[in-house]
Image (cartoon, rainbow, N blue to C red; front, side, top):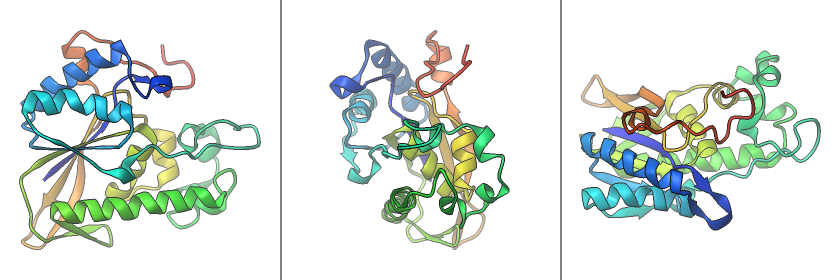
Length: 233
């Protein structure tokens, strides 16, 4: 199986949809996903993800099913020098300065990520993602996946930057704060995870691409910097 984690196209947050730029991105994305032979489509319940997915669903004639748990996280800093920033927008100067942030079990005990909401929301996403992959045929066990009913399906999940990064960290067994500080998913970008099967019983996720925007270059569209806080140009 290949699982495609796709960020929504350029957002119009005020109207819970995507902008005209985002619609051009979504159209280019649908062409790419048709070439990738996507055969299952799921989406966050939020309008910007649903509207992005619609272009691919219409092109491929596939019903997009809603995954209620895949909405964007609200992990905003409420105090300190990073007040107003989401957790995944914290600068690497903070997160890479302390080696404890690279430890799986301790990151949520350290400021500024020590608010109980942070770990509870992250754990919710991890558990729901495990339920999702189980329904797709793969049961997680210590970072590996038992083959319940393995498939060659190519599954697209349209979601968001923050929650998408949590998913990638969980699937690839990477320290979450370093994924937040080290990766960014551009609007309409594609991250593809292969459930790499080397035996009859187990598969292990491997990233074929993360945050890929080649469909935008193919369509002559620029990458929009939404979510980058400084010096994108």
